[in-house]
Image (cartoon, rainbow, N blue to C red; front, top):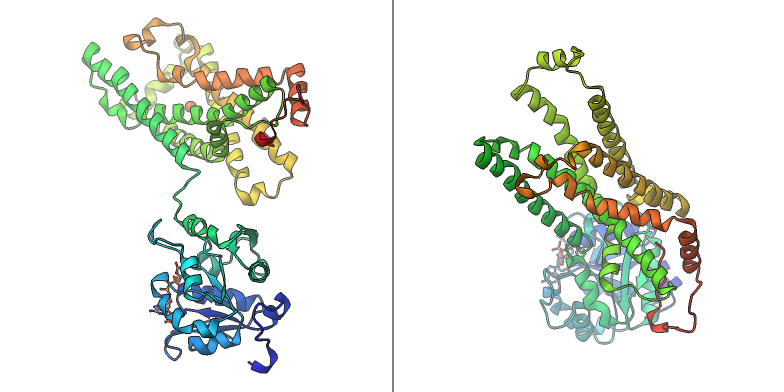
Amino acid sequence: MKRGNMSLDPLDSSAALKSEPLCIFGTGDLGRSLGQCLLQSGYGVVYGSRRPDSCGPLPQGAQVMTHQEAAQFANLIFICVHREHYDFLEMLAPHLEGKVLVDLSNNLKKNLYPEANAAYLQRLVPKAAVVKGLNTVSAWALQNGLPSGTQVYLCGNNEEAKRAVAEMATKLGLTVLDRGSLSAARELEDFPLRLFPEWRIPLWVAFSLTAAFFIYLVIRNTVYDYVNNGQDVSYGIMVSLANKVFAAVSLIMLSLCYLPGCIAAFLQLYRGTKYRRFPDWLDRWMLCRKQMGLVALGFALLHAIYSLINPLRYVSTRRTITSVVQELNNPTTFDNTRAWRIDSFYALGILGFFLYVLLGLTSLPSVGGSLSWREFSFVQSKLGYLTLFFCTAHGYIYGWDRFLDHSTYNWYTPPVYMLCLIIPTVVLVFKLIIIIPCVDRTLMRIRQGWERNPLRGETDDLKFTNL
Ligand SMILES: NC(=O)C1=CN([C@@H]2O[C@H](COP(=O)(O)OP(=O)(O)OC[C@H]3O[C@@H](n4cnc5c(N)ncnc54)[C@H](OP(=O)(O)O)[C@@H]3O)[C@@H](O)[C@H]2O)C=CC1
Ligand SMILES: [Fe+3]
């Protein structure tokens, strides 16, 4: 490494930064993985370490020296050290003057310190240009190859410093989002601490529905049988009853993926414009539709597995296979209509489940990304409604002629398969209304920017939504 080749002019042009080595302080997990990526992308890497002679294996081609020496070799320095150990940087401050310091640190929990780590670093080394960023990628992901287009965030007060870091990140295959000045650092540091934010509502809905249906079924089936008929059917809780709950939750959650789209369409029709904000609750609901659908798919999968073992249990506990075969072969006991009903019930269930899986697959970024916008919206909207239709029909055929039979209403309560058909039916009826040609035409015009009452401009309320 020739020192004579490089420019020590701080915040030099990014081209100069690229030709000179980049420096990494810290030879831990992140430092090593980042160094390896940078070397693979053609950058030279020099490590600054407390113990340059005994710091463990480093990526091939990297050099290691003391912090002070390493700092002289580069203008861009990645700080891969925990914030708790930043005090050594204060002593180094004179050697870091004018350098770009990239703060990658994260904390163990929110609001652990009164100021953001990057702001603290800036305070320790006031004459350096601190850029906060890249802290959302893990050492593991760097080592195992980042999926192309992985988003990273940057913020900092020095535009040129940010540009240099952004250029380097782009070369690593990352997509950079500039979040503004260093005051955004705390927000960036909180990103890795988020715990499934988009999953919270779907999981909460799934948990609540499961608990409610489970309790409801235990009371109206198990307890009812015990009290009224003196029969102990509590063994059914583990499979039959659970299977009913999974089916109901899955169907309701699938319909909840499509209900907000219908509500939004009616709102746009009512308002006569798409340029007004949806209520916050509707926005939040729409943002978690994908997760809602995946949770619904999970429950459908459970329902499919439980349904497969359910008849086996039935045969082994209540009847023998021979008796079932005898029943089927006896023309006096064989009911053709019932057979049609059962076969249609299974066919619709299997088709519904197949489409469900297809929907789930296209929501994977690697599959969805390979589809055009039209293909994606065809699968998610048209096939989605078809899935909902099949699954709802599967439920209706299950009920068949029992909807009007008063003996199914134990303690005057409707069975779960009826309850779980309410929302899907409402959604399908809404959709039918929306696709009536005159309604559909008006909605299309609104979505293309037409306004019924253009003078009523609510410019601060602008919202462009593609449903
Ligand atoms: N690991 C990860 O996936 C990610 C980590 N981060 C952040 O990167 C930073 C480093 O994480 P990680 O690499 O996992 O941590 P490690 O503990 O693996 O490495 C930290 C490195 O800091 C150096 N160090 C330790 N103590 C001191 C000290 N007293 N003074 C100076 N340097 C010291 C050491 O290097 P040496 O012995 O060479 O001096 C050590 O290897 C943290 O702030 C973390 O939040 C951010 C995103 C992802
Ligand atoms: Fe079913």
